[in-house]
Image 1 (cartoon, rainbow, N blue to C red):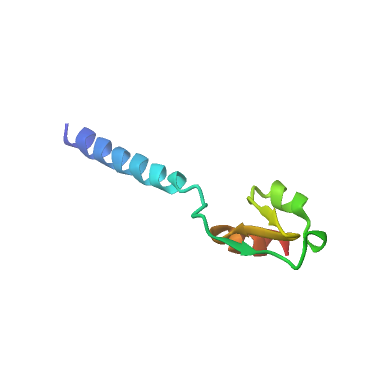
Image 2: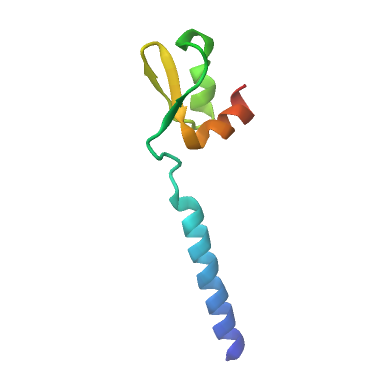
Length: 75
């Protein structure tokens, strides 16, 4: 009986940690400039790697939390 309680407790903690890991959507509202202009940034690569972006005044902006991911995959 004691093993079942420990297993249940560990399983519940595991579910909680996994839920918190996937809870963060990666968008905190702060965007940083990525590249010099729209013409120098390949937005298809950003889309392919699920990095949100927005274009304002001919410049591409990505979420601050996605900056490291963009450097890793898109530079």
